[in-house]
Image (cartoon, rainbow, N blue to C red; front, side, top):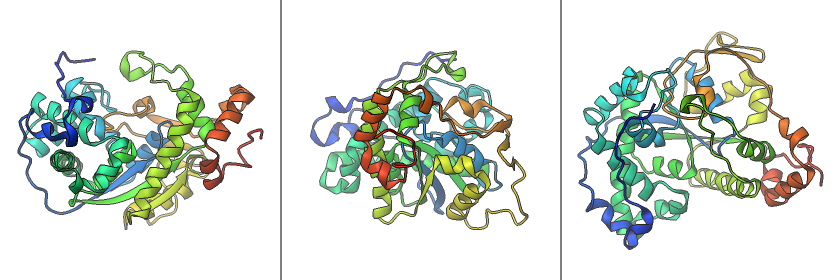
Length: 350
């Protein structure tokens, strides 16, 4: 499903101090300034924590549009032409073509390569200190301003093409949240989604073929790396709340156990007037949700599923994960397990 396109981008490791080359080696693009602030619900946390499910649940509510992992639109959408969750390649998806028209007058290779180059220079977790004080790094600040303008244009295009009052961005990577908070046109709400690190680590270690990548395996990570990243990523997302951004903590396990209750909590947080007046949510009954295909640009392969889906808590790790691995993960991630209420109730041997 890939389109033959040559991708050129600037590697952060090859940039002079301050990333000054970001605005000299690649011609800058003129992106129109936005007007009215957009409400963006950013789902932050670590991968394999249920963000695709949460995004799709939210996107089933009138006035909310789930766009998937928007930070990957440049590479996986425009340049590689991977499948949208509607089932069409990005280049043949009417919705995303409308977004590109609204944002940039149409998607082009130049736009996508510029966006990708800037993302690699700006939107990485190791650059969060620079996102907190970009003025101290003039070269980085120039790249950050331009990328923020481009990312804002994409969100503005999504909002206009969908007509939604709230756009859900499931990018998860904390640095994307720090970028969004610096965009004046974005009215940010942070949904901090947490899942037991043992389940996260087990999911990252499995061999899972992707239906949207012709069977290619999903990325795999070691248990140790996952535990360390889980701790760091969640701490960074908490930091957004400490900086004054509205933040709601949601545990994946609670969402699956009581989907309607937890979904109503999130809806009340991300947007006034989104909760249906009548009791119940039409697409959700007990532990079964009926989902229509949407337009998530990328994310977990479950974004391609439609129809009735039974919600169940994936606890396979309890049976299949060796005790030694569970203990190692518990030790590495103990502060977060205590903070989010998992230690003592996750069944981990101590």
